[in-house]
Amino acid sequence: SVEEMESRVKQIKQKFGQRLFIPGHHYQKDEVIQFADATGDSLQLAQVSAQNKAAEFIVFCGVHFMAETADILTNDDQKIILPDMRAGCSMADMADIDQTVRSWEILQRTFGDTILPLTYVNSTAAIKAFVGKNSGATVTSSNAKGMVEWAFTQKKRILFLPDQHLGRNTAFDLGVPLSQMAVWDPINDRLEFEGNNEDIKVILWKGHCSVHENFTVRNIEETREVNPDMNIIVHPECSREVVALSDYAGSTKYIIDMIEKAPKGSKWAIGTEMNLVKRLIDNNPDKEVVSLNPYMCPCLTMNRINLPHLLWTLEELDQGNVINQINVDETISNQAISALNKMLDKA
Ligand code: CIZ
Ligand code: SF4
View 1 (cartoon, rainbow, N blue to C red):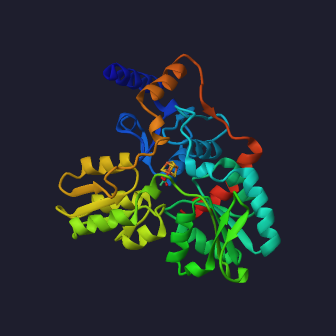
View 2: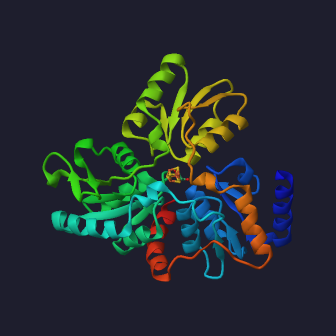
View 3: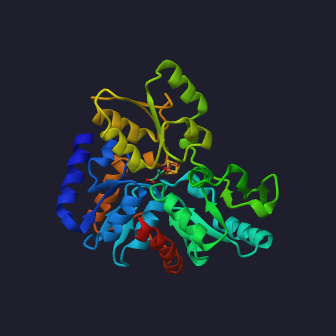
């Protein structure tokens, strides 16, 4: 039963004490988040994992790229475990390393040595390593603005991987006109741009988050029609049109802080992942909080981490078996760390 599973998780946690650390991403289900030793967005979880020197085992409740980042930032003798290996990220999968290397060669031929690569942390360790090797950095939605500003002190142009929306929204906020942004289509090796290539300042990798793309202009129009005093707040993984029409846009941490400190009785429609929106609804009964898309929008891969999978990995640990370990290749790890450190230094 659920009660039995919960009490076993508690027992094992107690038995391991400080040797076991469970970070939980804000998009995780309640049945998992209740056991998290720390909760946060991807930046906060990267920071707490990097700071934790005591835990021998880090059972990461989040998706694969986050567990890879934790492995890169922790010591060699700390083991990172992902409770379900199928917990990937469709956005991270949209930038494959071979495709990226090939694209980079083509772009270098067109633009010479004028481009700095930046990657959203929602990318594979191999992509972070590629970026690190080419003097670039990782960014999160909390510090994307600062990182893009920094990138322009280094090179004339940036290549932003793998989320075109975060790249476009961030550059737009910094004053780069849409007419100076191109989209790189890695499937057809094609630059989508009308005009003179010389004018391009930002090259956006053609990737997106399939969860945040579900929030549409239509959702905003309908919300405003029915409820004109609803505040609309969205994550910058939503499209430019959606961000432009919303009242507020910002990272996971920004969204949580805004809702928590909002005045009693205020009304909020949120454009981000379902488990987080549900939790914000539950934790803020004095406000009217809804999902901007009435169908809610779950992240299917985040949801693969559930109580049975968490318990399974913990039971195995209790038997002395480390299963589902995430172990990033040492060369990749060393190259990726330079990209990650630039971000953590500025976070
Ligand atoms: O969409 C995601 O996976 C996000 C927003 C992660 C994070 O915490 O930055
Ligand atoms: Fe990836 Fe989007 Fe899920 Fe985040 S919400 S893990 S970006 S698919």
